[in-house]
Image (tube, rainbow, N blue to C red; front, side, top):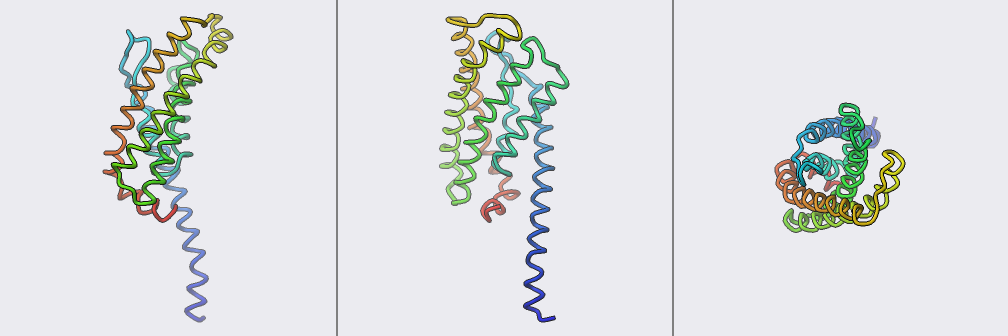
Length: 211
């Protein structure tokens, strides 16, 4: 067999092996980061007299989104909330907190990871791309949170808990949730870049190859 023919035949096999390895890493690390996010979800800091609670469970989802793509970050958000619901149950709000956590968490993860990945592929400095991706994540999390709470809360609590939420009471609830989302998104934007920098040797070379 000529060497050139052997090399040509071996290329698809190497590509298949690389694809399998990438899928395996995707599945394994998405699962590990989902478990980490779940643990962090149970570590809550009460604010507004305990009405709302601050947690850091979106950090692993952001890391997953940057390292393996937005779909991995969304998967972490979904798995985290499903496990949390399975352990704690629906709670006093019949799962509304988990629903909103998934919505606003996904709203932050998708633009943050998409902008960060695009910048890192083009070799933009971590400092510059962190500002851009952080701004995108903050804007998305806060704006989607306002819209989702305003549109979903009244029919949800009306149908599930038979509670009328409108007028000043609705805007007070939306305002409190918006403050919480703003605090969370700023914390995420500040904490994630140092972690991503520390882990860059594990994902950056493959990301820049276009994987």
